[in-house]
Amino acid sequence: MYELRYDPIIETVWDSLPDQARDRFDRAILAACEDPFGTTEPYGIDDGITRTLVLPETAAVLLVSHAPRKILRILQITHLG
View 1 (cartoon, rainbow, N blue to C red):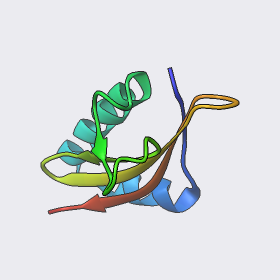
View 2: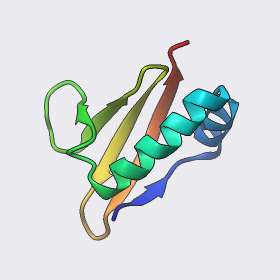
View 3: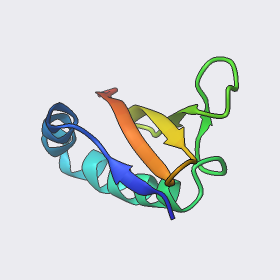
C-alpha cells in the first residue's frame, strides 16, 4: 500500500467537494493507494511517476514515488462540476 500525502491546500479543495464527489474521490484515492497504476492513467507521456485520476466530477494529478518508500502524493484536485 502506498502512503498518501497532500498539502493543506489540497485538503481544503478536497473538503470543499460536494458530498457525492467527495465520497467518490475518497473511494477512488483509497483504491489508488492500493494500486496506483491499475486505477489511474498516465499524465501526458507515461513516465511511470505522474498519473491522473479521472472521475465523473473530479480529476486529480498524482505523483507516485517508489523509493525509499511507496508514496502517493496528490498534486492537484479539480472539481469538474
